[in-house]
Image 1 (cartoon, one colour):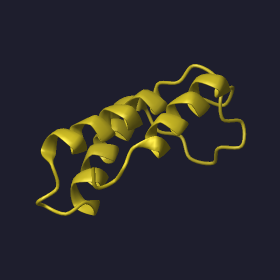
Image 2: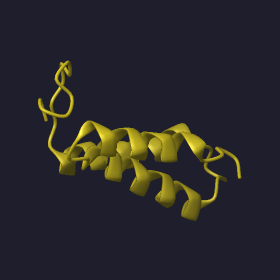
Image 3: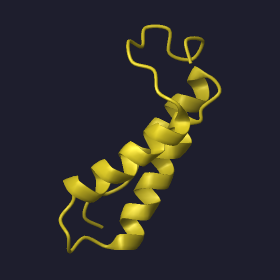
Length: 71
């Protein structure tokens, strides 16, 4: 973790980070929002957490940011 994100002050395992991401996506988006879209967003966030280096992390981050919130 420190190798990819050396300035990170908070460390968490991928499993718990993924669970938190799923919870946050579910609570932050309206209930009527498309479930499939929520699952895709959560999957992208989990992929970001699993990045092995900064290049991979940036790639995953930009994929998340390119997604439309209300597609």
